[in-house]
Length: 368
Image 1 (cartoon, one colour):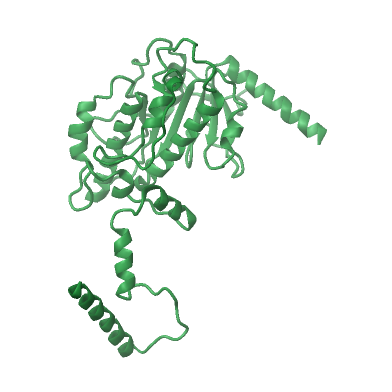
Image 2 (tube, one colour):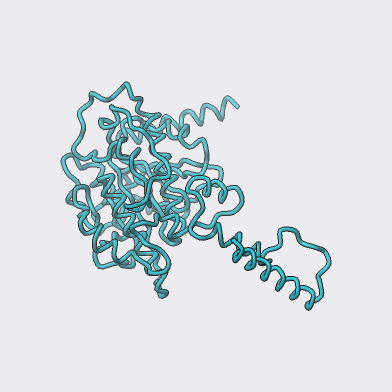
């Protein structure tokens, strides 16, 4: 055990020293991350890994430090990436080993399933808030100069909720402290675009709804937003190819005055709120299914959970859409059987009983 403890301690010290000497960012993700080593797999029990990358020009190729390479080929890492899988309760404790001088955070979210975007991004959001509170105590660091590239404050994070409709009330609210305005970070949202085409009208509108809420969320946080993939999802959405991500990250981390020069990204102070609340809002509507102005994302696209996760989601947002009363209606007319019997009734008997239940149900409605 002492031998393994010594090796683990040395490994942590080496990774901390490496990340403190080269530009470094923290990538938070839940189901899918941006990684540049095809052979690297994050174990199910692991929540933290580190990539040391050699970043060249956009035309060049980024290499993973330590990856198999040709003889006499020198790989010098010039970008460090901490990959943090937000699935464990002790994630914040694990992140505390990362050097305190890192102020660049990237939240990576997968758009392949629109109904799961809101739960995933909400978990990343809450984790980032807890991490900032733990790493930057409220009584320290508030007198340090604020860099021009740190455009997202802890106050904005506490008062912004992803997926909230403009005319809906927030499900929860956090009261920011006076010093939260001075706790600022550089934040980037990387949305992984699915390559599958949306042929169904409702699927297309669901994609437009996600796009609207991502743009609205990024504007509220005044952070950088980029869509990573190969397929264009809308005319007004720039696509960042995967092979250019590392160069974009390095330019973003090294920026000292402004990040306006990032290609294929929507940068802070360039979100066009008027466009978001007019054109994008109209494109996000789906008649008969949801009203993007009044229905928040968790009501428009209710996520499908199982077991306790579904109960927690209902407790957080309340009954989702019409599922509450529809499920009660199905039970009342015999559509669902709470208790299964070992003997199946005869077809005629079952039909008679179902008809009686339906008749009794509507008679009770007329009496009321």
